[in-house]
Length: 327
Image (cartoon, rainbow, N blue to C red):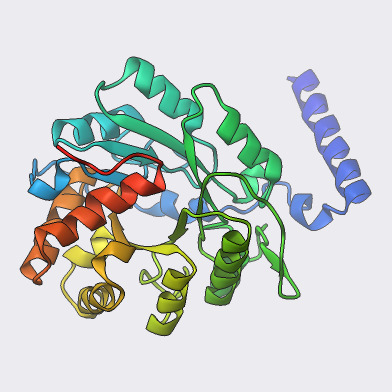
């Protein structure tokens, strides 16, 4: 036990020395760094229930925003279960999202040992556990065995915008300084994350300049702590090549948020929008249930089956490099 304490102390001293040498003092100054996920550990919602919902829009659908366990706080389903549920409802594919680590390796394992006959892809989110906007984190994700990495999210819960919104004093991932972006590029799909609306447009403009053709505008209607964009900003995003994400939860909860989302989709055109489940928290609908409820809600609002195909199948397929669904 004494050796362990000495070892931990030495490691802490070494980290402190490195932090001073490279200017990382503010990041490593805390003995136990604060983390976004701490608040979730205090929540104890009732477990989710599989409603076994079906919908024609699910057949051939791809969920580009699927959270899963294990994670740093409770998730209702592990990654193998998420993919199995999607396969059972006729879905074509899933992109596994974790805010803190890459998931391309997990996608390879599920393709090998999990449900078969379904596309499984990975991603990386450039939050602080991977070093923030870190080119090597992107390179590693895209080079992992199988090469199933597809999406790079700019910082989400550790974005400068979200940390500042909550007035928190914890490490944050920064994407711009003095109106200039921190550079990175690779031939992957780029998602804007939880940044300021102006930063999101900067990111998209630079991506377009560099020839990146697959761009996701990360749930811009979900709330001010994320990227909250006006309709003119969303129209500009579409002109820059962005596909606008609407989360299933926004569409299945009656109220102003749902009404606004429907207005936005009509204004932008269904071909410029896709629906992601963003599911995975305990107490929320599972991924296919959430997507099925969203599809039914959109159909009730007057959207056609072709519109639903764009939002659940065709645009997600393009964003992960697959051909249009043709069955």
